[in-house]
Image 1 (cartoon, rainbow, N blue to C red):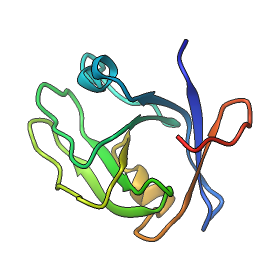
Image 2: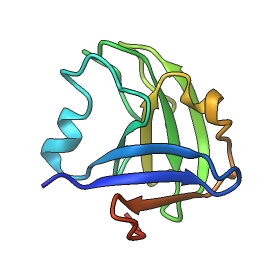
Image 3: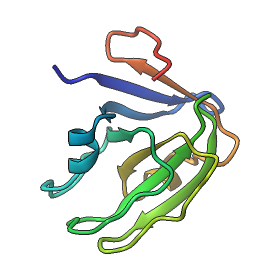
Length: 126
């Protein structure tokens, strides 16, 4: 059963994603977004643990948000294109992959704290 989360920026109150899936085991982390043609608005992929992502074999650009275990944004990388590597962020515990342009649209930035909650409104420490 897929776990679906909602991600909200506490500074702005803006939802970053309303349908975020989690990749936290060998199979889901390996697959990531491979095979997809796009991320729709509202969709995201949370990869944990993760400090860097690759875009090999990807078909579309994404935005990447690097977060600590306490859900604080420590770095963002906008419009990461296919066949590129993201920056390496040693202080990150996990990343959130978002549709390209979402960081700018939501004005997410370093220091923001996120709420990551289950679709049913149940708060999660994922």
